[in-house]
Length: 164
Image 1: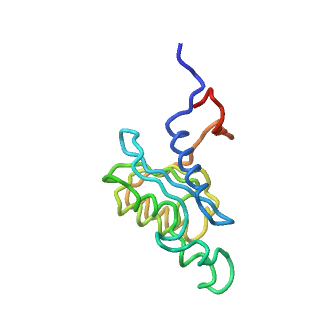
Image 2: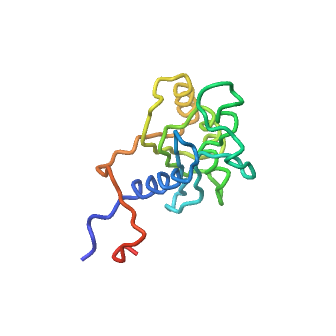
Image 3: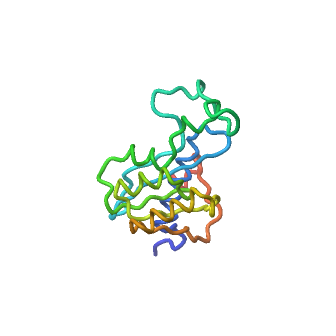
């Protein structure tokens, strides 16, 4: 008899997105993204971080202050990183992301051909960026939905022989 307590596809891919976010060096925000094609194959992952070749120790991670002394002009968001790291055509794909995309990432998502966004948090709901994102997504016909799951915690173990 097969197991019945396995995770669903949405939970699996969101788990990959969350795990990817753990790679971020950002002390305040760790966001990950996972792009999946129509056959449920992962074709791109990313997290918020600096562009390739930029040393994490040479750039600021502050959220406030002079623009050039904050992380904002330098950090690539998880969604864009996943798009840039993708290995295949993105037309018709889904992107799983911990945080609803900002307006800049939304432009890249739409332009890449991704047709659905699955997210966990809508932390910035109602902000101008959020309103702009949703207006563009609605205009382009991109579906977005908050992941509804019973799972609150999923534990990974690197030493448990029963799960390896």
